[in-house]
Image (cartoon, rainbow, N blue to C red):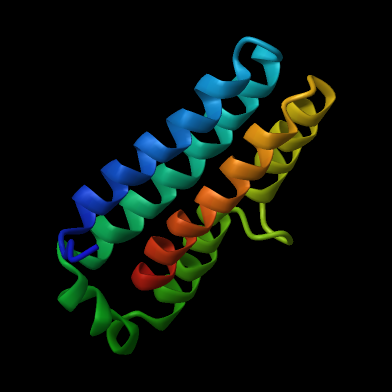
Length: 128
């Protein structure tokens, strides 16, 4: 919870998204591939923005808004999409995975994953 290095936070994010992919690969491999492709695209965008802003820690990210407001806005939207908020791209794979788990009579697992994704939302909001 005290992590300040952005790369480590994003590494934890990758582990979290891997959990979503692992849980659904047995039931729907195509959905796993969709989730992987969208996550790779969004993560690449985040890392490219971090690289262009030359940000390595949360403290330097906090001051980036004044230097590059447009990139900061795009970063905000991409991070919220990674978190899986409804109007954004990252919501679709999570919603489809929850639907598939429910169809497979794994509703408790779907509820647990949904609730645990709120923890990931906390980290993304800290970055945003």
